[in-house]
Length: 484
Image (cartoon, rainbow, N blue to C red; front, side, top):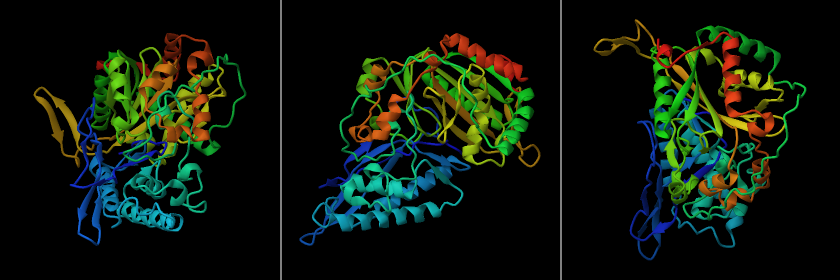
């Protein structure tokens, strides 16, 4: 399973002492769809008093954030995360604030290094699973903050050189309406700072102009991508879908991907239509950390969880353009996760360049133009295995050795057509810690929706994208015509 490329925010919840056991409980999973969702928890710490000599401590840690996991199955992904959480839960035998004294600078740095080493060992125990958008160093710093080690004493410049103690290996890409709440590489504990609305977002009204092309890919990569798309276009069904509710969108996305994976649906590109506003959180995110749920309810905004990782998306019908690409795994065979993002979005970049925008790939999973960031992507892979053949009585499973299924990659992108920045700022939770980072504040200001960049209506833009696909050999169909 590939859950895309994330921005690297890791939240380690917990580490506050409880006199009588664990603090906290299960977080309500508002709008979660499907069996693959990870229920987020906010846990505390068990403090068991051993008498005059102090307490024996075992922290209960939960990792949430907009990272992604690459593996062949949900079970393997969850096993890695569980191993990391168990490793962190078993670290240390001192109260959380033990390093807050005068010796914190030396001892704190040592603790963080030890934690990073322990997490790295846990990750190494799962060689077939890859964390994307975070690493052992970032998780260690998140843990340090959660247990009360001040960031300035939790690391030194040689080990963790980035601002505010975040790992330098974690990129801080430009924020978009769908990821503004989680675009910094930061960490917070269960007692994080109150939210700060993202009211600083601005959208410069700059008309799109023709711009010189900039190199997007290496020549070899470009040739390879052209060949892959040349094979896919004649097979590809393009669907401009009917408006669906947020929960139905999540279910449809995963169902269509599984149908392609089992050979019951041909490769498909779906343009979404939303019938209600919502916030879509990533598979590994904590809803309570990303969304002001009371505000969302008051605004009539549903909160749902998608089957891929990454950051929160703020959705309003008419203000976003979302598409999903469902293809057999063969389409991305032999590519790195990063390269597979560039491959899957190649058609979109070409289509937008046809409008005079100098569109390029930005960071790991973003699409941007000369005016600002346009959108971000997420991805997941469904492994090959047993093939399913529809029958009059239902679905008959054919042994894999006789008829192997192709597997599938689900790649979806949400682009900002327009944006209600004030409402987004009220609904999404952007912590003060994140907004203290100059790079994050600057990134938020660089958001520029397609409406201002193109001067086109949303319907005109969608029609242009559909026409581009058909001109390349794809077939425009209804949903029913896309099944194999």
